[in-house]
Length: 256
Figure: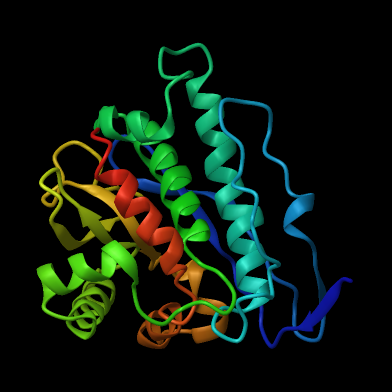
């Protein structure tokens, strides 16, 4: 069943590509004026253009993470921003040797001077990991192998949580906070600007991401306005630790 929301103001959101030296907006998502109703659709209705990559099939409805993450933000994030990165990436890959590679290899091998590919490959990869790493009725603490490793590398889950929230809070402007595992299997926390990934060449902390938090304003501003800390706190209530643990165990078997 479709749902309607009445918004108090109009905002414009932008997913990002860039030229060689400067980021620029590539998609604007105007919201309705005051008192205008907006209809929330369904994630299954969203399709990327034909190409090497398709959107992650969202395993929950847009409103399933409420009240921690609101339905309208989730719809805009998934059906506009994520979709745009996916379509842009597919267009950039056509006819190149990268077209048949898995996204992890594309991100790990990307030419960092190629701003369009860097931002759109990162945007697709980062958002796929972000949406897949959340679930309704989730949250709590890490379990199984990952729980043991978090205690080993951070002292306790609470210490990890504090350090991760701090990285997300202190990332200036748009970017991401990450929990990664390096080639030695050690867990580390880092942050990256824009759509950069810890998999990319030259990152100060290099590793395979197993948990990522989007701190671009389009991820939270409708619901939380300037209160990024509240958004970060709520994110911990929807982390799909089963999936994160699965990624950790997989990362122990794979190297990029």
